[in-house]
Length: 232
Image (cartoon, rainbow, N blue to C red; front, side):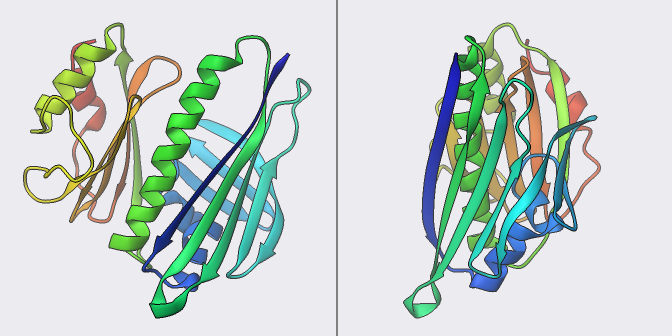
């Protein structure tokens, strides 16, 4: 069996088409909002996530600054993921960005992975939009850290919200102590926008809380140690 999927997201941002192209079609740009650290070499797109690599993608379309697309090669079981971005300039300096994430998840147990992927895709697109509106043309330093396995997610999320100075049910627009705001939240993710960058917390598919930040002003915080202090 398995699951074919396609997720379409769009937004209008204040960034220029060239600034959007830098964010969606260069390694440093993608690393500013996607998971982990991305490198583009020729027509090959590689993303490191912690100590592992997401399956390599091959660029299929590159028409700057309007259309960029790449996809992983199908695995023997049919698994693949494809990413496509369309950029359209609008009046008054605004630009529309459309993103399509599609692919195939194999096996009869695809539902949990599909759910995690959907929540993650929503966060990454919201991060891209926030980055383009708040830090257009700037690159961030990606930070990835993993906490211990979690057995009680409600307790872990509650402890995280408290540690960050947030209420028990944070919502987009809520203020962040020290400056900034919550820019995104769903059942598996939380995104905070501050003058120093974008801070993200993700319920990892393999059972750990993941800090997946994109820092405009890097610091020396031990994020793995921070996550370890949360109840599991």
